[in-house]
Structures are given as C-alpha cells and as structure tokens.
Length: 289
Image 1: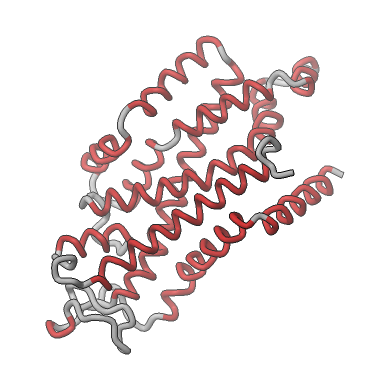
Image 2: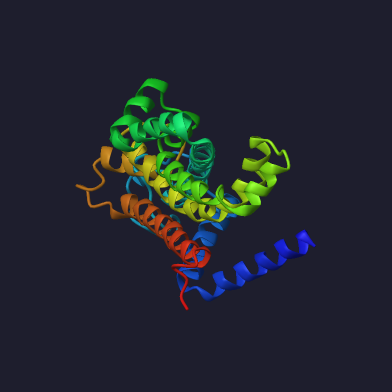
C-alpha cells in the first residue's frame, strides 16, 4: 500500500512537471547537456589533448573544426564537450556535499532546539555572513588546484542557506501529531529524524537542490576563471581562463570564449527554471490554482 501511494505521488509529480512550462524548458535544456556530456566524446573525432600546428592556432570555425581552434591549435568543440562532463560532475558532486551537510544540520538543529540549535545556527550564520567567493579562493589556494579539492571547497561553503530552510521546516514538522505519537511509543530521536522528519522536508530539499547546483556550477566557473581550477581538466571555467589569458578577446577570437560562456549561462538557467518550478509544484502556497 505504501509503495502504491509513493508511486501515485510520483506520477502526479511528473504530470505536474510536464504541465509546468518552466520545468519543461529547464528539463529539456539540462537533458541536452547531460546527453552531450555522456555521449558527446564518442561522437567527436578530436582529442582535447591533441595539439595542432602553428597554422591551426586560433583558427575561426571551419568544416574541419566547427567551433574553431584554441590558442594551442586544439579543437574548441572537443574541449567544450569534455567541459560539459567536468562541469556537470563538479556541480553535481559539490551539490550533494552541500545538501547533505545543510540537511543534516538543519534537521538536527530544528529537532533538538535549545543549546544545540543556538550553537549550530551561529555556526551557520558564520558561513552566511562571510563572503563566499574570498572564502572559496582562500581554501582553493591552500588545498591546491585539483578537481576534488574544488568539489570539496564548493561543497563545504554552500550549505548554509539549505540548513536555514530545512531548520525552519523541521520546526513545523516536529510539532505535528504523528511525531508526538511516535515519541509516545518510545521511538528514538534518530528514528524520528530519519523516518519522519526527513521524508517531510525532502520535497523542500529536492526543490532547493537544483538551485544549489546552479550556484555550484557558477562557483566552479569563477574559481577556474581566476586560475584556481584544475589545469589538467577542460572544464568550461578553465576554457574561459585560457581564452582570456591567451588574449583571445583582443584578437577577436569569439569562437574561443563565447561557447563556454553560453554553455554556463544555459545550464545555470535550466537549473534555475527547474528550481523555481519544483518549488511552485511542491509548495501549495505557490501552486497555481
């Protein structure tokens, strides 16, 4: 019976997503980039590490190179497709870390309250008040330029907003009758938080996840553009970094820096549209009548 109810809710949610224009557009854009990231490298005959000769440096788009070549004679399209895989990977893993930390702190803080709530919220306020970009830059510089370090840095600096939102919802859920009834039956705090609080705050966490993913991708792009990314990977941020470092803008090589910039904008737009749409679908107060 419980499985049937969950299946029914899932079908209703998918139906609501299909009927929501923002969700549909966001899902289509994101699906295209995910498919490109998965299958794109198989379709492009050029290697991202394949250097061209001097005559191929910063060549405009042609039949041989549809998006031209970069300052090292490499195919920009190949780098762009490889960058989709790296940027989405960093954004996805960093988002999982942020959501995990934020959800855990938010539930624990809201459920226990009192001294634990005060201590955790003051800790959360520290991450909300301190400028996120300088903090990430300092941590990335200390830990070193590695893709895993970038994921870690973005993940541990982007959870504060989620913690605040989840705490607020937890304060409401823990006062409901089914939680009090479970307490009276002798259930422990861990059981209640895992089996009763978390399922009820999960829709809010889910809607917030896609918005956090957009911020994570922008953060990776920013760090890489500033020279703090992994130089051994062809992320969109590193492409922008090398494009500006090589003087592609002054040379008029628009095909070098515009494609990765447009890709970042489109992916962030897709996550933003999905986030607002999910919030509208899952929040009865925002749902259209």
